[in-house]
Length: 135
Image (cartoon, rainbow, N blue to C red; front, side):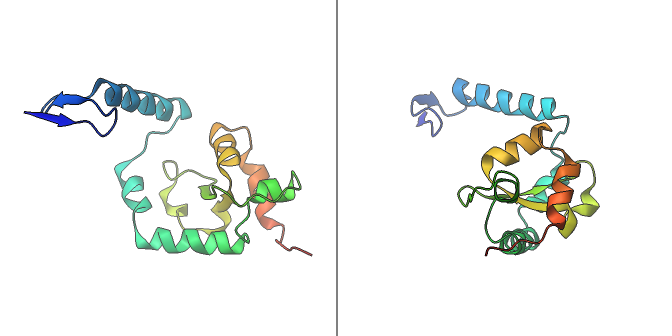
């Protein structure tokens, strides 16, 4: 029996793994390994909770739905592709998962920089202490 693969669009046997998907999954695992953190199942489960969704929206509202790094450091308004970043990663300390002082709104580019350590945790903590206001 054949099926259409949602990853590559080709036909595969029903019990056969798509080589494109297998390579993509391998790259994702390697990326997690390079970042120094492997996603724990507890952290993954947390990301799917209503509690996290509410907190994420609360933090975005606190940050005026702006990337705080772009706004305060680059003096640029960025509202697209926002996410909430855990300054101390869930994989390191799950107890800080809902702490306001550990959460900051960042655009995709800044989030990637923060994940790679190009924006330090100390810098992000300093930014959180600066009140957000638009005049």
